[in-house]
Length: 136
Image (cartoon, rainbow, N blue to C red; front, side, top):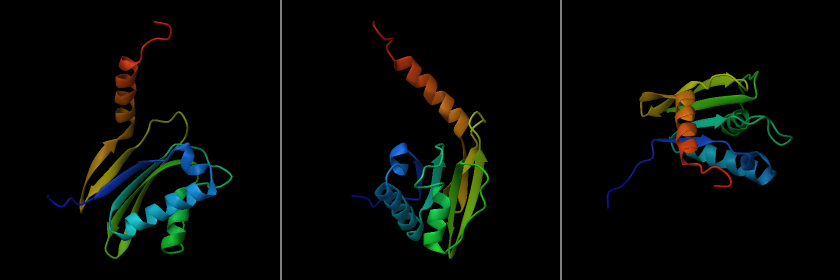
């Protein structure tokens, strides 16, 4: 059996990640562990803030080094690039109704750009083709 190496993890935040203190804490803990292991990490958060969490980025950064980033909008993506010994963050903020951003996904020092809007629209089209109309 060949060993496999995880290079990057992409996470789409779900309502469940934000609806209970234990879920918030688990999300943050897993995120910190991925980054500590040198795994590049992309968070896509298209959900509004809740009473428990406004954004995961600052909570993760507080756990790592006590830092925060200024953030004007609730909806965002952040791509963490693990550069020994520091993290580089690439943040894209957006509003409801905006075109979804293009974001870097890191493969060691190289990266690929993922066009979230194009990916979303293609997925929506694929899903609409497979939905059976109600009552038929």
